[in-house]
Figure (cartoon, rainbow, N blue to C red):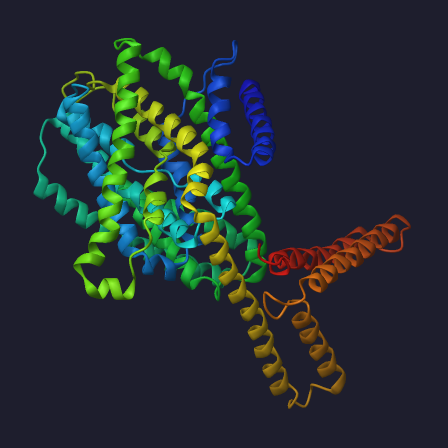
Length: 535
């Protein structure tokens, strides 16, 4: 137990150091974490750490998928549903077939094993590249499409993976039966996820206790995921459906206290999960290399290079026709959603980094078949998958800033950011106008005297004047006002601590007042971007 705690503390320390280093280098932390994990794996005397596939698929994956669904805008998801579906379903199937063909004709693997390898490496990971893409200012729609793809592609890949493993184990495969089962899983999981999301929101609304509500939010993804997974599905689509349902219907049912505490809780939880997973992914290098003995280093290197190349090329081959063909074939589609410039699909095709779901699926391969024979090429498949993950994560991840500058997408992202911020400023002022109109209605009530009315009017006017009217407004005044407000808050905070030390107020009183100051300070911080003029 002591060794486990020490190892966890070591990993936590590495996580912190890497986070600081990544910020200084402006590189996605996941890239450095994987590299650091590989380096740590070969430290003499350090016990090997092996990633349990059940832990990843049943414990780690559900909350990550659920939170991504909650963070996704249902309106944007629905608008881009065609592109997302073609990537999450079509591209995954196409990549699986392409890798299977390459594995059979180039690497000499049986077709069935090739399909297993293809299903494992077909879904791109969305966490690592999007973390960097957001900092680089990638256009909003590209982010939405990539994030939407990342929500659903794991479901397609895991279902194909189960069919492929079953085919290897039994030697039988029926395409009509597999297609029917796939359709039933998709429809059933979507309905199950919506039902769980509906029940979860109602229970949280009735509870009205942040601690109970956050506990219910933690239980939701596991209930969505485990039930379909237990009956033969993947659980991914159900978890995505629940997250999207909560995202669309939750704002008016979830209390402000729960949102404030829940955002902090989930951000920290996901940060630690993702950090540990990427770090431990790199640390699998030692255990994997120790297990592979029946294949030469040359075979492994060739297998990794061939599989990686097929994954990258297959994505480019699929993305461009998937984006442009529907618009060429349908004037209605072209009219409602004109064809984008070629740089956008190129960037979508380039961001094809593989991640921990692929590694977990590879490690979950059975060791023996139903007849007692060893699972063919199991260790070879696992090592190749690990190599593909490292090559795409490090290689494509590091090249993303260069590719983005080459494509000229930074300027497009800046222009879109300007539009979004203009919409935000208009929303802030329109909300203040609605509040002012409501105040005029309240003034007619008998219990609202002139003092109360004046106080509320001053509050509304102060909130309105703190935000520039438009992007050409007085940003310097807004920034100076925010800075002075923070200075006033700090003065109040220091005075409170002095009163507590002098025994004039209790610690409990100080905490209550301090919480109000903290909330006001965070409110100012949330508006910080609105005070910055566009570049």
